[in-house]
Image 1 (cartoon, rainbow, N blue to C red):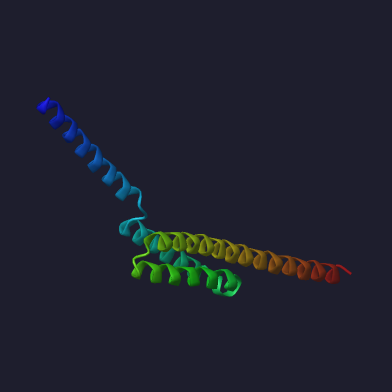
Image 2 (cartoon, one colour):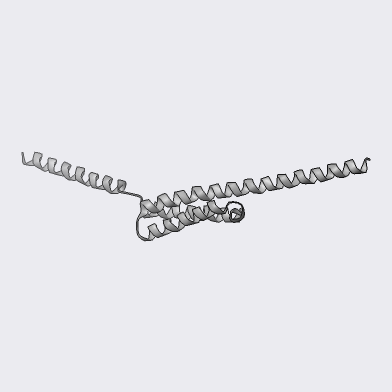
Length: 129
């Protein structure tokens, strides 16, 4: 029976250790994951800025910058779950701002082309009279 008790104790210790490892792994977002998400958020915000989002989607860009700033603050406080979540939101907002800026730029270019075509059409009509 002494060997049997020892085997049970070893199994219990192994189960306890596995449970602790599992709990630690599920406990929250790691620092590395949160840092990666903050970096992705920074990249997305920078890309939005270079696409002229400050001119064509300023509200969306400001929202992304605010969430990125909050994510950095949460990261410094070691609140990695909140930092990762806010960084994800900043990335989405920045991507939306970039897309909206590109769409607005293309819309303005199309409108300008329409105006130029109309001017040319009027010029052709005027000269053909």
